[in-house]
Amino acid sequence: MAEYDVDLFVIGAGSGGVRAARVAGEHGAKVMIAEEYRVGGTCVIRGCIPKKLLVYASRFRHEFEDAAGFGWTIENARFDWPTLIANKDKEIARLEAAYRRTLTMAGAEIVESRAIVEDPHTVRIMKTGARIRAAHLLVATGGHPLKPVIPGRDHAITSNEAFHLPELPKRIVIQGGGYVAVEFACVFEGLGSEVTLVHRGDEILRGFDDEVRQHVRAEMEGRGIRVLLNHTVVEIDRNGRACRALLSDGASIDAEEIMRATGRRPNTANIGLEAVGVACDAHGAVVVDASSRSSVPSIYAIGDVTNRLALTPVAIREGHAFADSVFGDRPWTLDHDNVPTAVFSEPEIGVVGITEAKARERGLSIDVFRRNFRPLKATLSGRKTHVLMKLVVDKTSDRVLGVHIVGEAASEMIQLAAIAVKMGVRKTDFDATVALHPTSAEELVTMRHGS
Ligand code: NDP
Picture 1 (cartoon, rainbow, N blue to C red):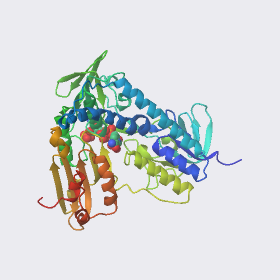
Picture 2 (spheres, rainbow, N blue to C red; picture 1 turned 135 degrees about the vertical axis):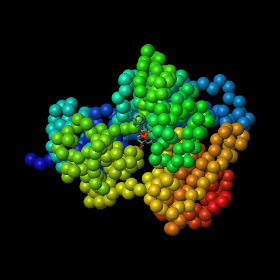
Picture 3 (cartoon, rainbow, N blue to C red; picture 1 turned 90 degrees about the horizontal axis):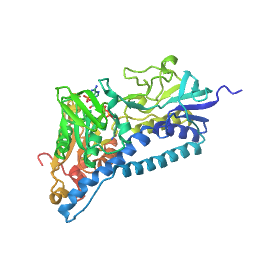
Picture 4 (cartoon, rainbow, N blue to C red; picture 1 turned 60 degrees about the vertical axis):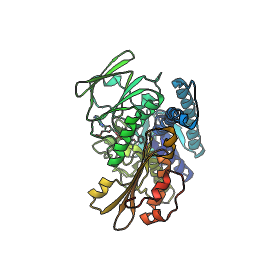
């Protein structure tokens, strides 16, 4: 009898787990993958994809407003939340089916159950009680929204529930100042809700460039989002459809929904990891080395459960590298430097590389180039909006260390800028590139000292 039932057992069929299972299968490994909810994970089912669909929906309102200055009259524009949610759900179901097909075609067996690690090579399938022996285990269980304990915390929703609300809240309070809070604040504002963002810090989006943070907040406020800094929600009451958020300064806000976007935590509880000696950090994230191996040699972990960079493309690459290295005889590791990121706020943020503050903290001698301008479209639309672009350049090497953009299509621009930054682009290369006129992106190659 073979020592193991499978070569690889993956726990969690999100973006990272599915990629690892597929690639391992294509390398000839016998693979099983367990998922207790829906195939696709956070990104496909209740994250990036449904969020971006809501973002698209929310932006039509501003487009309709902007259209007037270009001669358009749009009458009777009406938004219907149930239609959006139903269409979004249809697309998510299609994607889930595509993910399942990908796995099946790679020969991976999908097990629809929670799975628990029993020893370094054994997993128990909770639905059937079956025990599977695997040469390698991959933990790809992702994360979940953190809901700090306060009285009435169960009355609040998180991003998970925001995708399934029966109706669009007339008023919503969102707690937090990170990616999720900022994106959902902009989504709900665009769809027509009255939005209050309550954040404990003195500026939103900690970790982003300081000018970017201020710029985006000012733009959000300009669109009508009320931002309360240095405040927390200390208690939540609900009476039918009516909620009340009590704030740290004694004030209260009435709304139909209160959403908490106070960060995420890795899903490592109750899956047997402690018992087999897999080391986790203070936040519960699996501690791994550069090859995604945990403290137990047969157990690997990728994606949000490791809390390295909680981004889908990073989880996918980590899963791919793991499968190539362990089953394809092609070892490689992911370089986590200069990973581009975007916040799909209104306007968007696109970032690659380090902030001005981080460069100074590292003692680097830097030049900072910035542009803050009114985009051409705003001349006729009359919208009060500005684009911000910023380059952080190392004075000694002339290398571009950071590119920061706030404005329409910043996410699309930053993906391309990231190629250059990853290649070690110098400011003189930006200068040598001819502008493409008239665009916003051309400002990136026309920034000079004093201009
Ligand atoms: P973030 O870590 O980005 O933000 C959490 C926010 O909650 C911070 O503003 C934090 O404040 C605040 N917070 C944390 N704990 C408390 C508390 N006890 N009381 C009050 N406020 C609190 O988490 P998100 O959930 O927004 O996003 C998680 C990750 O998911 C992101 O880091 C990102 O990697 C990924 N993501 C990426 C997206 C994209 O690529 N567009 C979109 C959404 C998520 P403080 O700053 O003071 O700590």
